Image 1 (cartoon, rainbow, N blue to C red):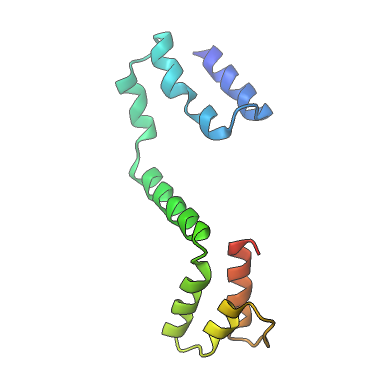
Image 2: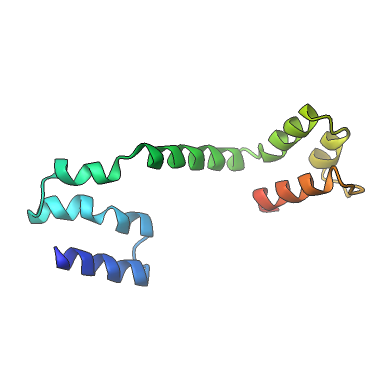
Length: 114
């Protein structure tokens, strides 16, 4: 068991293997080495909060890949009564920033990586 912990620590620090793969090592190694059964090791990886975050990250990645972040910002801002935001955000032309559109443009650009 200490060997698995030491191996994980070395891989985690050196990042020789992606951290996600390093985190899954106990799920594979503990049953293979006979420390515990797979049914005993798996519940540590199944938690409703983990799946909630995983779902949110997947939706965010899909929105980023489809360039929908600006669209979501425009729809949200228009629902709150901000006018002319569609032209400002989606045209990608230099626009006059005001207190209403400046923070929205900055947040969309920081989220989209542009």
